[in-house]
Structures are given as structure tokens and as C-alpha cells.
Length: 307
Image 1 (spheres, one colour):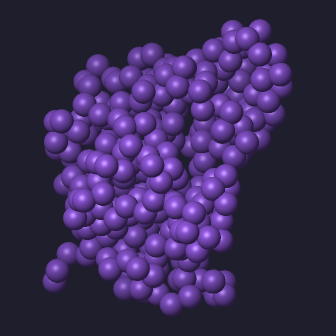
Image 2 (cartoon, helix red, strand yellow; image 1 turned 90 degrees about the vertical axis):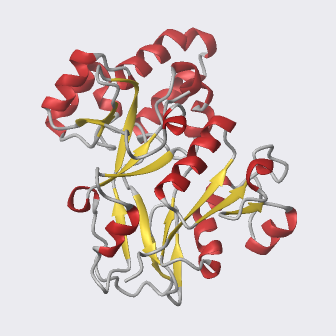
């Protein structure tokens, strides 16, 4: 039996380093096709892939936006609709709708194609849960991630800022995960986080497969304080954060530079984990160290770090 083929669909307006990391990673994992919608049709990263046989570059020209019925400034609408727009043209068996800061990581000895082969014959879509990548590495050079936390764990991990992370169960970004879905289905759409039949007919289950099949969704959304601060304006207004954190950040934004110390305190309490604090997170069941060696080539390893 031939191994299952799979593709990736994303929307980009990212730095060159993040863009190259994304493309290099999915090439290394064996994606048959990488479909990239460029928010800016003159994005300089377009030149890196426009002639690549495994990449389908989709600059969002005015004509393409008109075809999709969307406005360029409607970033949320674009995020929600690129998967469904690409879906009818995909020739692979399965598709993952991902963001540029999200990297699938199969467990050692596993591949994405091999995991797909494990799915039930009637499987339509599944969910891969996020594991947020923390800045820095552990003493063995492994990346460190946090996963969802039980309510009683939040205060132990975050102290005085725990109240801003309750609804996301300790994560700084979304906890919905991302979908891996079967291609070639009639009346089917692929949204930002989920996939479904347009007529909302029942799906034969939508399992979360991270622990059962050995695959993580690495979310590189912490980065350095300066990079995190640069993204606050967008993230405060696109539902990236817990609503309570968003409300607090919006209030701080009205204070300008006077709020810089409070912003730094928030960032460090939420994202900075030294060895002892990370060991506590692991002991509480919400932290793991992951070894990327053997998953990607050494030159790509150099790109696996937040800005």
C-alpha cells in the first residue's frame, strides 16, 4: 500500500526566518504540497518559493480577493477561508490547515504519513492539540513546551497573573488545536481550527490525536519580550489571548510607556521559565522537553528558535 499523501495550507505575512523555518520543516516532514497564501502580493518571501515544485504560491491579488469575496484588511476572514478555498484543488489524501508559527512534530520513529495510515477508514477529520514552545532550551538542548493546565495548577505556575489565563487553561494562545482532514469530500470546508460539512451533517467523531497517535502541534508564540510586544496590537484585537488578559492589556495600552514595567512583568511571569520553574511545570503534568534531533536536518535546527 502506498503511504498517504498530505498537504499544508497557510496564510503568511511573516519574517523571512519564520517563513523559511515553516517551509523547510514541512519539506523535511514529507509534505507533498505546501499551499501558501501571501497576504501581501509583493511579499519578498514570495521569490523564495514561486518556482518551487512542491509549493503553490497564492498571492492575494485584488482579483483573488474578489474571487474569495473578502477584503485585504479582513485578516480573520482570510484565516477562516483559505483552507476552504484551497480544498477543492488539493490532490493529496489529507490536508493540514496551519499557521506559519505552528509546526507538527511526530513522536520519534513516526511520520505524518504513517500516523494517517493508522486512522480508521471512516475518519474524516481529527484535532492536533497545541504545545506552546517556551523561550530557551533545557540543559540537554531540547525545546521546552507547555500544555493545558488543570485549574488547580494555574496558581502554582503563574502566581499573581493566573487570573489572566484561566479560560485558556494556562496557554497564551488558542487551545483549540488545528485539524488534519481528509481531502476529496463533497460539500466540505476547512476552517482555521476545524473542518466540517457545509450542511453541518454529523462527523464520524473528531478525535484529539496528540497523545493517542504521538504527534504535537508546536506553537511558537512566546518568543522574546520585544517580539511579543510588537505583536500585542494585533493579538489584542484578533482573539489570540484569553479575554481577561486581552482586557488587561488593552487597559495597559492606554498608559503608553508608563506601562512598560507591568508589560515586562506579565511577559516574564507568563513565558520565562528557568530550569527550576520548568521542572515544576513538568512535575505538575503540564510541561515536556522534546528532542528535535532526527526529525529535521541540522541546518533547519538552527531556525527552530523564537525570535
